[in-house]
Image (cartoon, rainbow, N blue to C red):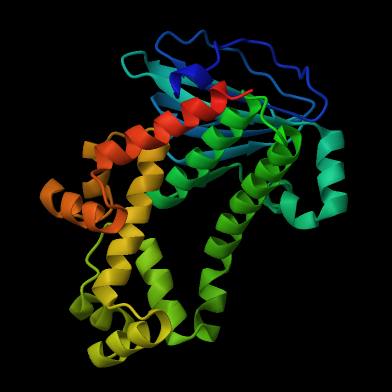
Length: 297
């Protein structure tokens, strides 16, 4: 499925579409492009490879999950240090006219773009959960672009706006987290900590020590707000993160450690209980459904 969505790399650095263009590249032998800039905004999500990015003369190594925002006129170039690992990335171009249309609808769509212009910081690292969510949204948008289903244009418009809001909200929440900390309820404090630390120790003892709340109070808050035990809540969150990661292209055997499951056996049992089938069967069914939708006129 993902292979069908890949584009062959083209060194063209101008837009053909009026509003936006989206590409997913995976190259073993990358033909480097010299320093250049665009007349449009480029959003770039780095997925894999041994790559440096030089922006306005400053060079830095990229890590999976790095989001780069390059406003018009920003000189840059990618430098591949080694061709042994595939160079995988998403490239999302948005014209100035389209950006102004989005701004007129809601300035929040362009929050991250405005932030980049204000502080001239172009690189925003995402944690694994945020990275998988963004990658999943990008693949969903690409799949819609490659189909001719009923309501395609309307759905594409929704996906584009949801993606930009996700980017802006993720960065906003991170930069405003400390300022908001004092105003959050205990329950919000716990759920935010869980969301940020799905791969870590989230036992009742660990949460109590970290957040300075009694174990009884934490357990009571979850039962009262969700009807679930703390363990049930965390398991559901971890499983949802694993599903997002699998849908964005990661192998099943790579995801369960990433989100806090100690071994495959415990992950398998929890997945079977939550979704009623094994992880492999679940993914096969999702891929089959997507393939059938693509064949539907």
